Length: 144
Image (cartoon, helix red, strand yellow):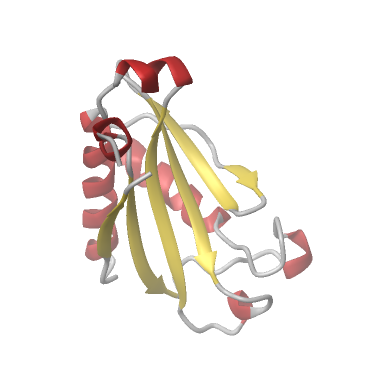
């Protein structure tokens, strides 16, 4: 693995909670068992409270994401459940993942663009916010 790929890894927060269960029915979700809108909306709200500008959530087939753009970088914060169809409607905690990744063009990657400090700031902000809600969080860095 070269230094550029390691430098542009993804930071991921993992936790289990019933706080972000979907309120719309399963057929309204991006895919069966793929939840995350409620979590992505919560993420956007916590970032704004911390003074970090973000957008509204966007849906993908794997979950939902919000984007932040600072002076240095465009950062995507993905939110998704690790669950099966119907799991979001039992009232029980399910596993969630929040991943924070700096988006880079091929040219930026070839030039060795360093990871923006905002990536770690966002990860830490969300970790603290989740822990303030009484949610235990594990943190990992995923090399790309």
